[in-house]
Image (cartoon, rainbow, N blue to C red; front, side):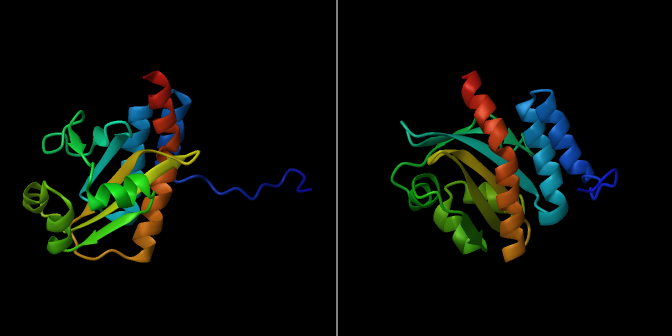
Length: 170
């Protein structure tokens, strides 16, 4: 028993912003706060969040840190693609490093290159064995570290309540 003493450290500002957004039931604000919080660790230049429709094997963009280049509402067919199998069906993190990997796995590779992005981490958001969508980070550097992947995975976990709220609302 600790008595009146506490061992808690104050939560980082980014985590507080995520908590505030969830407290007010604002899933989109939570995604924006998750993006901002992850940026401090990842240094990514683009974050997108996609909902996954298993019936059509499509992803639909819910959030984008660059809505001019990647507007919310945009969708991509991932049926029959190695990326779709890896991330959406097998629920595995995808890491693409360098221009060749971006070109191989993404049809919009020219747009990605045009933004100066050279690597990607795609995190499947899984609940109860079901893929609800992905949280995606694109970086201007060609390589990512294990620590980058862990930070991205944590961001994906932080996004889970937003996915569940948006699923319940539809």
